[in-house]
Image (cartoon, rainbow, N blue to C red; front, side, top):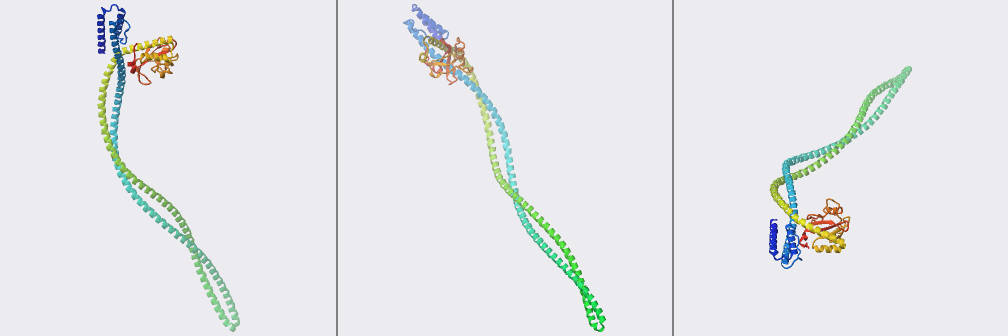
Length: 511
């Protein structure tokens, strides 16, 4: 900035000296001197884009005018380069400052997160170490459970075998009880038949007693008749006596037989009673044995299920024991990795602190750069304003040209071509672009969104006196740097807009 002022002062001193040296020899060329005075006045006011009129004067004036033209070209290029650099530096400085502050906020947040993560990692590491010890204890416990499970499996198999043998024994007992029951039933039937035979024998003995009584009666009658017969009947009397004696003996024998048979019948009845009781008990025992067989079958099935479950448990415990051993090994590896991770996190935390200090130093430098860029922007705003005034002047010239000569695509492109780099576009009363030196702009409508860059130019539709000049800034659609100005149309309601790209400044001509 100081060099520019010095350059301008040197130029002014040079011009003043030249004027003073030429003043004595160029009195006749007053108009040329006035043009030179105006040029100096414009330069003195900071309008370094003012171009001297080389058509005035001749001779020495021409040489001076050419010197001014050379100075004008040099200053124009310098101003345009300054505008370019100032715009880019200001925007970049602002962006870098925002990025630096965002980076600082991010690094602070990240540092806080790393610290929290480090604390959490330390806690996790402690928990992993505790879990490692627990997993080792669990592995030992599962191994013991597996051993106990195998013993239970052996005992369950032995119990199953014992129950199976008991079931077989009960089956044999049931068969024996059934056979005994059948034998008792058969014996009972035989005893019943024997009792019936004894009853028949008792009847026969009774009939024998009856016959003996009749024989006694007959022998008595025979003895009476023998007595009547006297001597002739003595032999018959002896026979009658013997017959009566035989009848008495038969009666006694029949009575004795009857007593014996009665005793037998009694014994048979008692035996039959006990036999029936035995048969009843045998049937009950058989029923109980059948029930026992059913319950034993249920027990056998339950034991089979228990054995199957224990086998499954034993197998699962064996697999879990292996898995637990693997898990314990993996947890030990995880514990080692966790310790390494914790150490790495602490290293990262140290690096973050160092990076934070570095960024803080950069932020301070960026703040200094931002202050410089602000001063540069303040100084450059004057040149930006001059450029805006010149573009507004061009826009008004084109608005006058539209009034005088009308407008079409050929005319607007020809007018833009003369400027070397400026693009023009013209809208209707609704802000819709109907004519543009850049065909891609045709059909664009000035937006009603107050947050958009182009909304400001829509205000011209409501106020024809507005002359809007925006600072050189990034365009929303493509992030390229452009300077936009706008004035009202003079032939109807609408907007004449001019745009100059930062990259096209060197192509821009000042006529």
